[in-house]
Image (cartoon, rainbow, N blue to C red; front, side, top):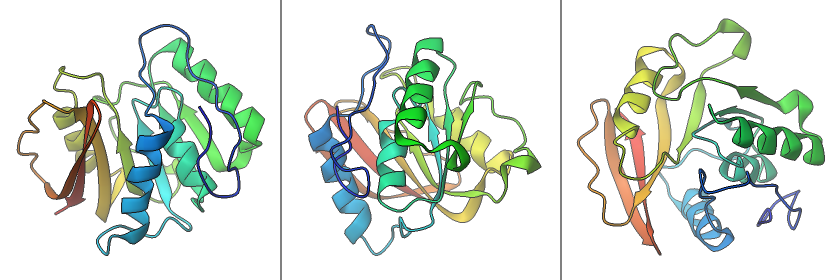
Length: 187
């Protein structure tokens, strides 16, 4: 697994060992970021403040940082995933521009002031079939983690239905292999 484009293009990323995480493939990541870079409803990646929920290896957050993001908060409860993210932060020398949060993405609470301004780009890649996206997306709004015009990029199984998510409006949906990616705008 490698960074697909940007200043870290070609740099390898560590992934957690085992089967608890399922990193987004390089091909799907490239397609996803092509959409983000060309859609008029997507925030610019330059200077984006990113939160990567259910981070796993952190591939989505690191890809966004490679393409101009200014800060990324990685959130995961799994020790193996956090270890992989830490290794990737070290490899890419992103110490001042990233943070790792050991917390459940479905129970974030209030955003700590020390994390700075709210986030405008959210990546969510929860375990398939567990319906974890609705509480995570609600928690982002309730805890004031995100801007009023934030964009969320949600990955679910291709055959999974995405429920109506209060406070979020779908703007696009794509299927790449076994994954369905839904782009949601706050509002």
